[in-house]
Length: 310
Ligand SMILES: NC(=O)c1ccc[n+]([C@@H]2O[C@H](COP(=O)([O-])OP(=O)(O)OC[C@H]3O[C@@H](n4cnc5c(N)ncnc54)[C@H](OP(=O)(O)O)[C@@H]3O)[C@@H](O)[C@H]2O)c1
Image 1 (cartoon, rainbow, N blue to C red):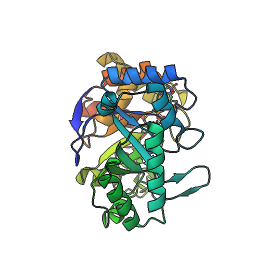
Image 2: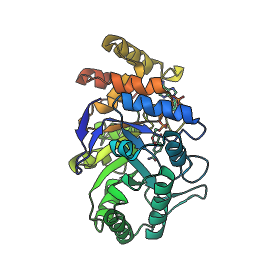
Image 3: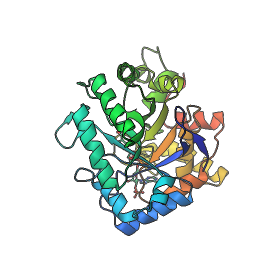
Image 4: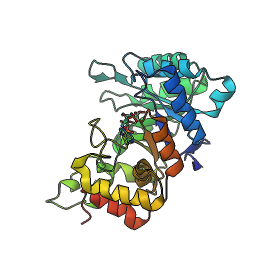
């Protein structure tokens, strides 16, 4: 697995991240097998959130309990978590008090005394940038959090945060798969009045904004057809796309999952792919199989996913 220094940080990171949103009902052995597969494939970056699981911090706690990492091994991995969504109540909270409380909860559940990356999970309409800044200052000064970022934020929302936040916002985690990629499609078909693809639903050039500002985009749900409705791989509704994926997988001698991830890693924004699989073999197939698609292959997949190239 290729590594690189994440822009705006000193962190050496892999292009593939293992997301832990779906481990709530997994046994300790299954979590350990997934972790071992990740580490064997060079994936040492693990994505969490305070809300993952059936209760606050459940997946964070399951991860820590299953792995019982030594402090030496803890230092070998990159732990990322998120806060700001209020479980089951339909609102967001990026206030000072909430951020501080959730970080303490994540530290306790993860059994660690520092978090490598803390992301603001979703933009809070009522956010006060000065409060976020105060929280980030205190968390950074105390050593509880080393780096910061956001998730699902538009360029302007990041600008608003930056009016007060001093630490670099190094990450923006965004929904992105071959079939659900407005952050890519819109830019290819802008100002075409009759095309739905030209409608701005990505907050206005978020991918280019992140690229221009050295913010690493992390692609979440890279295999989902849309929003948690199942993967497009092997789905007859996406037959033309699956045909192209199968052909490329055969010609490169890699798994189909690796071609799907490669469509994201081929983008020059140097995005990371956040895999949600709990199947060790699938994780390894991506970690070991990511290839450098040609420009023609990249656009071929894009068109097969039913996006237009005007
Ligand atoms: N920032 C945000 O707002 C946000 C939102 C959602 C998720 N996330 C993060 O992104 C991560 C990934 O999200 P996701 O789980 O929706 O992503 P995903 O990788 O698109 O989906 C993984 C799911 O697809 C299933 N799947 C079925 N066939 C598959 C195949 N051939 N290859 C790969 N997966 C297959 C997996 O099952 P198996 O487990 O059985 O393999 C798993 O249930 C999460 O773990 C979380 O860390 C962030």
